[in-house]
Image (cartoon, rainbow, N blue to C red; front, side, top):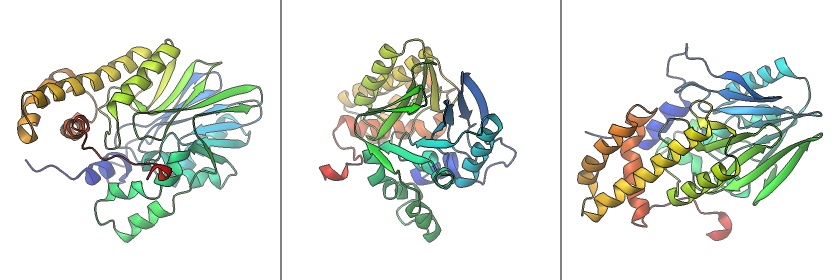
Length: 312
């Protein structure tokens, strides 16, 4: 069967307004004192999860959805809770469904913060999700994305008055991922390092490093509430289950490769094994085959991932 191009899948899953307009864009859920997750259902116009943290002198927002209209709705929801200034936005990675609404918050005076690799990729790497020949309007959309104002390399601490917010660089999903840690509430905004019972987008992934990052998160925050990039709010067990998916994927693909299988034969071997365990997870039908193909390329050392500008 002909596979849909990944660019088409990405647009349909994360950014198209062609899906049912009745789908709620997101639901704001309180996950701690002054800590809120904005959980977006699959195929909503918002495209991903986001959230915000209220301190004594301002607000920090985590991710901005896939478009300005959805980001403005998030801003309106924040204003129902507090009139404190929105001081910071943290983009957890460069993908369009997490950065597309930056302008709504930049225009309101927020400083946008990200791991330094993101700035070099946001207006370039996002073009690949529109196919080899993006339409002029899609190219214009990507090239006009609001870039971060402030960059960090490994770690940065932000104080919202007395409230400490820790932002940390972790490897795995894109090479430019941040997690946002709130020690006083034991909440972790994990971005797309955690997918709640959903198969992940692996287009930029290094799954061996990703598994190590998840192990570190679980060791350091064994009882935390995790706000995933996609799917519902997660527990530590949900994070373990997601880590185990990545482990299973690597093991199943590696075993099939060791038996000499590649191409369609590899898919025919591994796909039923994954379906038995994970067939009820979100995005399975869209991402399972691609997860196998991309992991096969990674294990063979043939996968291309974004390279930081300084390393090119």
